[in-house]
Length: 131
Image (cartoon, rainbow, N blue to C red; front, top):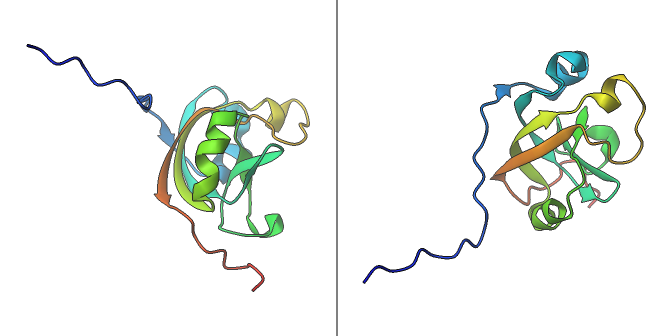
């Protein structure tokens, strides 16, 4: 008798080949990275419907987090990530430079699409948080 395969609880996504870059690399020359898969390490400090981004620094206050790149809106992603915040992460995503080059986008600009996020450190303590 052959046992049936286990039911998939979570979809395993293959991480596409991606160029390691910094947030600053993408912001400095967004046209170069548009449509390309990149790998970025940074901090996800908050994830709200209007603001969910990977940042250069761990920071409670947005002014202290440095440059950022916003995630496209995905309700399931937001629900998955919130209990782990703030989070040091390795993000693999396809760059959409539309909001960096051609137009000004408000709220949650979809600069990072099709993202795969690997948690490196969860529930970090903000160094600039009021006690």
